Amino acid sequence: MLIKRLITGMTLLLSLGSPVSQAVEKIIIANGGTADSLQGQTARRFSEQLQARLGDQYQVEYYSDAKLGDEKDLLDKLRNGQIQLATISSIMSAEVPEFALFDMPFLVRDRQHLKLIDSEIIMTDLAAAARRHGLHIISTWENGFRQISNNSRPIRSPEDLKGLRIRTPQSEWRSLMFASWGAKPTQMPFSHLFVALQTGEVDGEENPLSNINGARLQNVQKFLSISNHVYSPIWLTASDSSWQQLPAAVQAAITEVAADAQRWSFAEGARQDTRLLKSLGNAGVQINHVDRITFIAASKAVYAQFARQVKGGDALIERVMDLA
Ligand code: PAF
Image 1 (cartoon, rainbow, N blue to C red):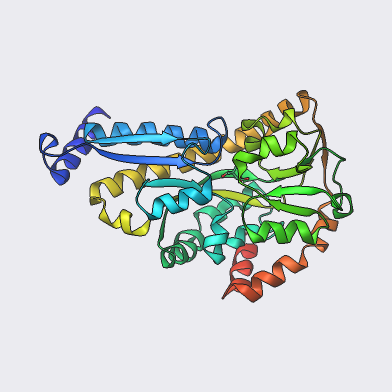
Image 2: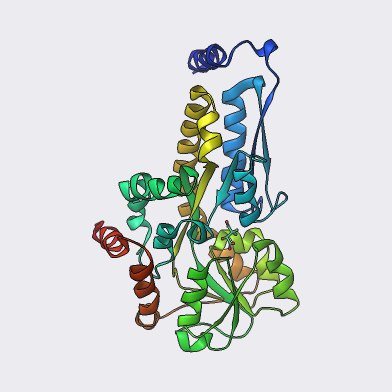
Protein backbone atom coordinates (compact mmCIF):
# COMPACT_ATOMS: atom_id res chain seq x y z
CA MET A 1 0.00 0.00 0.00
CA LEU A 2 2.76 2.37 1.13
CA ILE A 3 4.91 1.46 -1.87
CA LYS A 4 1.94 2.06 -4.21
CA ARG A 5 1.43 5.54 -2.69
CA LEU A 6 5.13 6.36 -3.00
CA ILE A 7 5.15 5.32 -6.65
CA THR A 8 2.00 7.36 -7.34
CA GLY A 9 3.61 10.35 -5.62
CA MET A 10 6.81 9.93 -7.68
CA THR A 11 4.83 9.68 -10.91
CA LEU A 12 3.03 12.89 -10.07
CA LEU A 13 6.26 14.71 -9.22
CA LEU A 14 7.89 13.58 -12.46
CA SER A 15 4.97 14.79 -14.53
CA LEU A 16 4.46 18.02 -12.61
CA GLY A 17 8.11 19.06 -12.22
CA SER A 18 10.01 19.79 -9.02
CA PRO A 19 7.83 20.89 -6.07
CA VAL A 20 10.25 23.73 -5.19
CA SER A 21 10.06 25.16 -8.69
CA GLN A 22 6.28 25.58 -8.81
CA ALA A 23 3.68 27.41 -6.77
CA VAL A 24 1.02 25.38 -4.98
CA GLU A 25 -2.02 24.98 -7.23
CA LYS A 26 -5.52 25.06 -5.80
CA ILE A 27 -8.25 22.61 -6.65
CA ILE A 28 -11.52 24.00 -5.33
CA ILE A 29 -14.57 21.78 -5.14
CA ALA A 30 -17.94 23.22 -4.13
CA ASN A 31 -21.55 22.15 -3.76
CA GLY A 32 -24.97 23.62 -3.13
CA GLY A 33 -26.11 20.89 -0.74
CA THR A 34 -25.29 20.60 2.95
CA ALA A 35 -22.11 19.17 4.49
CA ASP A 36 -24.26 16.69 6.39
CA SER A 37 -26.02 15.22 3.35
CA LEU A 38 -24.69 12.20 1.47
CA GLN A 39 -23.32 14.39 -1.32
CA GLY A 40 -21.58 16.53 1.32
CA GLN A 41 -20.09 13.46 3.00
CA THR A 42 -18.98 12.06 -0.37
CA ALA A 43 -17.41 15.36 -1.44
CA ARG A 44 -15.51 15.66 1.86
CA ARG A 45 -14.20 12.10 1.60
CA PHE A 46 -13.24 12.71 -2.05
CA SER A 47 -11.41 15.96 -1.18
CA GLU A 48 -9.43 14.36 1.63
CA GLN A 49 -8.43 11.39 -0.48
CA LEU A 50 -7.54 13.60 -3.44
CA GLN A 51 -5.36 15.78 -1.20
CA ALA A 52 -3.53 12.69 0.10
CA ARG A 53 -3.05 11.45 -3.44
CA LEU A 54 -1.82 14.76 -4.93
CA GLY A 55 0.53 15.72 -2.09
CA ASP A 56 1.80 19.18 -1.14
CA GLN A 57 1.98 20.66 -4.59
CA TYR A 58 -1.79 20.88 -4.76
CA GLN A 59 -4.16 22.29 -2.18
CA VAL A 60 -7.63 20.74 -2.34
CA GLU A 61 -10.34 22.95 -0.80
CA TYR A 62 -13.92 21.84 -0.31
CA TYR A 63 -16.83 24.29 0.23
CA SER A 64 -20.31 22.93 1.07
CA ASP A 65 -23.68 24.58 1.83
CA ALA A 66 -23.65 26.93 -1.15
CA LYS A 67 -20.79 28.92 0.48
CA LEU A 68 -19.54 29.64 -3.04
CA GLY A 69 -23.06 29.89 -4.45
CA ASP A 70 -25.91 27.64 -5.47
CA GLU A 71 -25.57 25.14 -8.28
CA LYS A 72 -26.32 27.70 -11.00
CA ASP A 73 -23.56 30.02 -9.68
CA LEU A 74 -21.21 27.04 -9.42
CA LEU A 75 -21.65 26.26 -13.11
CA ASP A 76 -20.73 29.89 -13.91
CA LYS A 77 -17.71 29.67 -11.59
CA LEU A 78 -16.56 26.44 -13.29
CA ARG A 79 -16.81 28.09 -16.67
CA ASN A 80 -14.86 31.19 -15.68
CA GLY A 81 -12.19 29.19 -13.83
CA GLN A 82 -12.93 30.40 -10.28
CA ILE A 83 -13.43 26.81 -9.13
CA GLN A 84 -12.23 23.56 -10.65
CA LEU A 85 -14.88 21.04 -9.57
CA ALA A 86 -18.54 21.20 -8.57
CA THR A 87 -21.21 18.67 -7.74
CA ILE A 88 -24.29 19.44 -9.80
CA SER A 89 -27.67 17.75 -9.54
CA SER A 90 -31.09 18.51 -11.05
CA ILE A 91 -30.14 21.77 -12.72
CA MET A 92 -27.87 19.90 -15.16
CA SER A 93 -30.94 19.38 -17.37
CA ALA A 94 -31.32 23.17 -17.63
CA GLU A 95 -27.83 23.25 -19.21
CA VAL A 96 -27.73 20.01 -21.18
CA PRO A 97 -31.20 18.86 -22.35
CA GLU A 98 -30.26 15.14 -22.52
CA PHE A 99 -29.82 15.12 -18.73
CA ALA A 100 -33.60 15.56 -18.42
CA LEU A 101 -33.58 11.78 -18.74
CA PHE A 102 -33.29 11.96 -14.96
CA ASP A 103 -36.44 14.10 -14.88
CA MET A 104 -38.64 11.41 -16.40
CA PRO A 105 -41.03 10.44 -13.59
CA PHE A 106 -40.76 6.86 -12.34
CA LEU A 107 -38.33 5.92 -15.13
CA VAL A 108 -35.70 4.61 -12.70
CA ARG A 109 -37.55 1.80 -10.96
CA ASP A 110 -35.49 0.91 -7.92
CA ARG A 111 -31.93 0.47 -6.62
CA GLN A 112 -31.39 -2.55 -8.84
CA HIS A 113 -32.16 -0.39 -11.88
CA LEU A 114 -29.28 1.89 -10.84
CA LYS A 115 -27.03 -0.27 -12.99
CA LEU A 116 -27.94 2.60 -15.33
CA ILE A 117 -25.26 4.66 -13.57
CA ASP A 118 -22.48 2.36 -14.79
CA SER A 119 -23.94 1.97 -18.27
CA GLU A 120 -22.71 3.60 -21.46
CA ILE A 121 -25.85 5.78 -21.45
CA ILE A 122 -24.07 7.88 -18.84
CA MET A 123 -20.40 7.65 -19.63
CA THR A 124 -20.83 7.77 -23.42
CA ASP A 125 -24.12 9.43 -24.39
CA LEU A 126 -24.61 11.91 -21.55
CA ALA A 127 -20.89 12.63 -21.11
CA ALA A 128 -20.66 13.49 -24.83
CA ALA A 129 -23.74 15.73 -24.57
CA ALA A 130 -22.16 17.53 -21.59
CA ARG A 131 -18.94 18.05 -23.55
CA ARG A 132 -20.91 19.74 -26.33
CA HIS A 133 -21.92 22.27 -23.65
CA GLY A 134 -18.34 22.72 -22.40
CA LEU A 135 -18.65 20.45 -19.35
CA HIS A 136 -16.69 17.37 -18.36
CA ILE A 137 -18.49 14.76 -16.24
CA ILE A 138 -15.92 13.03 -14.06
CA SER A 139 -18.16 10.66 -12.16
CA THR A 140 -21.69 10.14 -10.90
CA TRP A 141 -22.41 10.07 -7.19
CA GLU A 142 -25.58 9.32 -5.30
CA ASN A 143 -27.99 12.15 -4.50
CA GLY A 144 -30.93 9.77 -4.15
CA PHE A 145 -34.52 8.93 -4.98
CA ARG A 146 -36.62 12.07 -4.50
CA GLN A 147 -39.58 12.24 -2.10
CA ILE A 148 -42.22 14.92 -1.49
CA SER A 149 -42.60 16.80 1.80
CA ASN A 150 -45.15 19.49 2.70
CA ASN A 151 -47.06 21.16 5.51
CA SER A 152 -50.66 20.60 4.40
CA ARG A 153 -51.50 16.90 3.94
CA PRO A 154 -50.17 13.46 3.01
CA ILE A 155 -49.74 13.17 -0.77
CA ARG A 156 -51.25 9.93 -2.06
CA SER A 157 -52.26 10.91 -5.61
CA PRO A 158 -51.70 13.98 -7.82
CA GLU A 159 -55.11 15.20 -6.59
CA ASP A 160 -53.52 15.87 -3.17
CA LEU A 161 -50.94 18.20 -4.72
CA LYS A 162 -53.62 20.52 -6.17
CA GLY A 163 -52.77 24.12 -5.36
CA LEU A 164 -49.74 23.34 -3.17
CA ARG A 165 -46.73 25.59 -3.71
CA ILE A 166 -43.87 23.15 -4.15
CA ARG A 167 -40.26 24.34 -4.40
CA THR A 168 -38.31 22.71 -7.22
CA PRO A 169 -34.69 23.14 -8.33
CA GLN A 170 -34.11 25.74 -11.06
CA SER A 171 -35.05 23.55 -14.00
CA GLU A 172 -38.10 23.69 -16.24
CA TRP A 173 -38.39 19.89 -16.17
CA ARG A 174 -39.19 19.46 -12.48
CA SER A 175 -41.58 22.44 -12.78
CA LEU A 176 -43.36 20.77 -15.69
CA MET A 177 -43.60 17.53 -13.70
CA PHE A 178 -45.18 19.16 -10.64
CA ALA A 179 -47.44 21.38 -12.75
CA SER A 180 -48.65 18.23 -14.60
CA TRP A 181 -49.56 16.80 -11.22
CA GLY A 182 -51.59 19.90 -10.26
CA ALA A 183 -49.12 21.61 -7.90
CA LYS A 184 -47.88 25.19 -8.18
CA PRO A 185 -44.13 24.71 -8.70
CA THR A 186 -41.78 27.47 -7.52
CA GLN A 187 -38.17 27.33 -8.68
CA MET A 188 -35.72 28.37 -5.98
CA PRO A 189 -32.08 27.73 -5.01
CA PHE A 190 -31.79 25.06 -2.31
CA SER A 191 -30.08 27.45 0.13
CA HIS A 192 -33.29 29.56 0.29
CA LEU A 193 -35.53 26.59 0.99
CA PHE A 194 -35.50 26.27 4.79
CA VAL A 195 -36.58 29.89 5.29
CA ALA A 196 -39.16 29.66 2.48
CA LEU A 197 -40.75 26.67 4.25
CA GLN A 198 -40.51 28.32 7.65
CA THR A 199 -42.20 31.53 6.51
CA GLY A 200 -44.80 29.73 4.40
CA GLU A 201 -43.55 31.19 1.12
CA VAL A 202 -43.86 27.61 -0.17
CA ASP A 203 -45.81 24.66 1.28
CA GLY A 204 -43.45 21.87 0.35
CA GLU A 205 -40.53 20.58 -1.64
CA GLU A 206 -39.09 17.40 -3.12
CA ASN A 207 -35.67 15.93 -2.36
CA PRO A 208 -33.85 12.76 -1.39
CA LEU A 209 -34.10 11.93 2.33
CA SER A 210 -30.44 12.73 2.82
CA ASN A 211 -30.92 16.35 1.67
CA ILE A 212 -34.11 16.72 3.71
CA ASN A 213 -32.29 15.55 6.81
CA GLY A 214 -29.04 17.37 5.93
CA ALA A 215 -30.91 20.70 5.79
CA ARG A 216 -33.08 19.79 8.83
CA LEU A 217 -36.25 20.31 6.79
CA GLN A 218 -38.02 17.97 9.25
CA ASN A 219 -38.10 20.99 11.59
CA VAL A 220 -40.31 22.90 9.14
CA GLN A 221 -42.27 20.09 7.41
CA LYS A 222 -45.16 17.97 8.72
CA PHE A 223 -45.72 15.37 5.99
CA LEU A 224 -43.33 13.21 3.99
CA SER A 225 -44.69 11.17 1.09
CA ILE A 226 -42.47 8.44 -0.30
CA SER A 227 -42.81 8.77 -4.05
CA ASN A 228 -39.37 7.92 -5.52
CA HIS A 229 -40.63 10.07 -8.41
CA VAL A 230 -37.16 10.51 -9.90
CA TYR A 231 -33.68 9.23 -9.20
CA SER A 232 -31.44 12.24 -8.86
CA PRO A 233 -27.70 11.70 -9.37
CA ILE A 234 -24.88 14.07 -8.44
CA TRP A 235 -22.57 14.86 -11.34
CA LEU A 236 -18.98 15.62 -10.36
CA THR A 237 -18.29 18.22 -13.02
CA ALA A 238 -15.43 20.33 -14.38
CA SER A 239 -15.37 22.80 -17.24
CA ASP A 240 -14.07 20.88 -20.24
CA SER A 241 -11.48 23.54 -21.11
CA SER A 242 -9.95 23.73 -17.63
CA TRP A 243 -10.03 19.92 -17.40
CA GLN A 244 -7.96 19.71 -20.61
CA GLN A 245 -5.37 22.03 -19.05
CA LEU A 246 -4.74 19.77 -16.04
CA PRO A 247 -1.64 17.53 -16.20
CA ALA A 248 -2.54 13.97 -17.20
CA ALA A 249 -1.41 12.61 -13.82
CA VAL A 250 -3.75 15.01 -12.01
CA GLN A 251 -6.65 14.09 -14.31
CA ALA A 252 -5.93 10.43 -13.56
CA ALA A 253 -5.78 11.05 -9.80
CA ILE A 254 -9.10 12.97 -9.83
CA THR A 255 -10.78 10.33 -12.00
CA GLU A 256 -9.63 7.41 -9.85
CA VAL A 257 -10.44 9.02 -6.49
CA ALA A 258 -13.84 10.10 -7.87
CA ALA A 259 -14.59 6.54 -9.03
CA ASP A 260 -13.83 5.28 -5.54
CA ALA A 261 -16.12 8.01 -4.11
CA GLN A 262 -18.85 6.86 -6.53
CA ARG A 263 -18.70 3.26 -5.24
CA TRP A 264 -18.73 4.52 -1.65
CA SER A 265 -21.65 6.92 -2.16
CA PHE A 266 -23.96 4.28 -3.68
CA ALA A 267 -23.18 1.74 -0.95
CA GLU A 268 -23.59 4.39 1.75
CA GLY A 269 -26.83 5.70 0.14
CA ALA A 270 -28.37 2.23 0.30
CA ARG A 271 -27.30 1.94 3.96
CA GLN A 272 -28.74 5.36 4.84
CA ASP A 273 -32.21 4.91 3.26
CA THR A 274 -33.83 2.96 6.10
CA ARG A 275 -32.02 4.78 8.88
CA LEU A 276 -33.05 8.23 7.58
CA LEU A 277 -36.68 7.25 7.12
CA LYS A 278 -36.76 6.06 10.71
CA SER A 279 -35.11 9.16 12.09
CA LEU A 280 -37.40 11.53 10.12
CA GLY A 281 -40.39 9.59 11.52
CA ASN A 282 -38.92 9.87 15.02
CA ALA A 283 -38.63 13.62 14.50
CA GLY A 284 -42.43 13.75 14.19
CA VAL A 285 -42.86 13.86 10.41
CA GLN A 286 -45.93 11.88 9.26
CA ILE A 287 -44.85 9.41 6.56
CA ASN A 288 -46.93 7.67 3.86
CA HIS A 289 -46.39 6.10 0.40
CA VAL A 290 -47.87 7.59 -2.78
CA ASP A 291 -49.97 5.62 -5.26
CA ARG A 292 -47.46 5.29 -8.13
CA ILE A 293 -50.09 4.25 -10.69
CA THR A 294 -52.06 7.51 -10.47
CA PHE A 295 -48.84 9.53 -10.63
CA ILE A 296 -47.55 7.60 -13.66
CA ALA A 297 -50.88 8.18 -15.44
CA ALA A 298 -50.55 11.93 -14.81
CA SER A 299 -46.96 12.09 -16.13
CA LYS A 300 -47.53 11.74 -19.89
CA ALA A 301 -46.90 15.43 -20.65
CA VAL A 302 -43.35 15.22 -19.29
CA TYR A 303 -42.42 12.26 -21.52
CA ALA A 304 -44.07 13.92 -24.53
CA GLN A 305 -42.10 17.12 -23.96
CA PHE A 306 -38.82 15.17 -23.67
CA ALA A 307 -39.51 13.33 -26.95
CA ARG A 308 -40.24 16.68 -28.66
CA GLN A 309 -37.38 18.66 -27.17
CA VAL A 310 -34.48 16.20 -26.96
CA LYS A 311 -33.10 14.68 -30.13
CA GLY A 312 -33.07 10.90 -29.73
CA GLY A 313 -35.00 11.27 -26.46
CA ASP A 314 -37.41 8.38 -27.08
CA ALA A 315 -34.54 6.01 -27.85
CA LEU A 316 -32.70 7.04 -24.67
CA ILE A 317 -35.81 6.32 -22.59
CA GLU A 318 -36.24 2.92 -24.18
CA ARG A 319 -32.63 2.00 -23.51
CA VAL A 320 -33.08 2.88 -19.83
CA MET A 321 -36.31 0.88 -19.65
CA ASP A 322 -34.61 -2.10 -21.29
CA LEU A 323 -31.92 -2.31 -18.62
CA ALA A 324 -33.07 -5.46 -16.88
O1 PAF B 1 -32.91 20.21 -4.45
C1 PAF B 1 -31.80 20.53 -4.94
O2 PAF B 1 -31.58 21.65 -5.42
C2 PAF B 1 -30.69 19.47 -4.99
O3 PAF B 1 -31.21 18.20 -4.76
C3 PAF B 1 -29.55 19.75 -4.02
C4 PAF B 1 -29.99 19.65 -2.60
C5 PAF B 1 -28.91 21.11 -4.25
C6 PAF B 1 -28.50 18.68 -4.24
O4 PAF B 1 -27.62 18.91 -5.23
